[in-house]
Image (cartoon, rainbow over all chains, first blue to last red; front, side):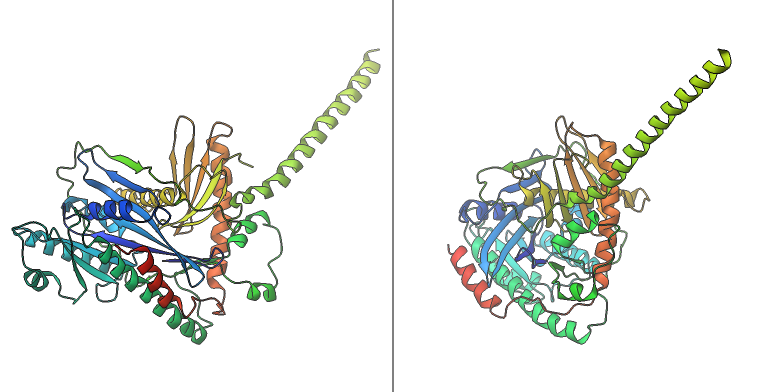
Length: 333
Length: 137
């Protein structure tokens, strides 16, 4: 989650998880095609030639102004195939909410449970659990005939009593309700975290922030340009409000060695497909997002000084040469 | 000073923090997500090779190139540049900027938080209304 107070922006990350061919990418495609053009950005897919997700699909969604904050969701899918676990784990980094897209067809129950277990393991590596993270299960492919009943699926998959939505991503049914449910939970969670963190911050005012990075955008930009400037007065520092606050669960993250042999991954040709149907989702250039490149300014002074020194050396050399030429001339003459 | 086209500061989760330069032609959200993904994949590659981290990544194109420099342990400085400058110049200045930004982030993270900024109390309700408006079938 990223809360940028300078730009008045809230960014949340939602990941669609589930076994291969359960319909995660189709969910995103439906959202992309049905969401109002003013609210959605471009759908980017890193997929193989066979249209299987290789790394992730990405779709930014703009919810608009919520209590004075521009609220955006970044929707990701993971590659469902078992051997892509390392990339799946990477996509989960910093996740704020998870949709588990389950395949309702008979014979797929084992794949579903395996994927769910894998989700739990991968989340645990970031110190997250399904109980504490906003989580919705989507029973997909309900339009097909040979499918499990909702009760059967609930028994097998919904051990954490998560909200469930029946869907048929292919026809678009249930796709928006799933997202709406999860988005609501994510924002509620954010609201709760924020109000409790204000209290906590007051209580632990002296405790340094463990893993959060807070930066004032202008400050981040200006600092490199003033390397030799004295540190800012304490009063000013206190009056300045941090622009970017990122909150993360840092505890419990441990690099567990889990390697899955990339069998069958050979011959896969990755391709990135930006579906450029709409450019309106592009964020406007922000005045607060100032020039990071100003960091190059201090070098301007040193370069100028270098030129001056070089010029002096050349002039000195020339003068010395003239002088010795004169002396030599006298000696020889 | 390095004559780069644009510079973007991105965090590891794929959110853009700030940007500068000629960025109008680019879809910043998608670029940020892809840069973070690319970096995450590289980091995993480094780990598998027994290397702690690859702190600089460079993609060369026919016209434009991009260099990614790690800032601290959770932010990436992406520099897009063309033939008007050289990789050496970009690398030199990016390294300098990265070190300064790292120091700055470190300082700020140590600073006391006065708790003056937080999401408004009506956020949850407002969010619900907005969700109804946007995601009506």
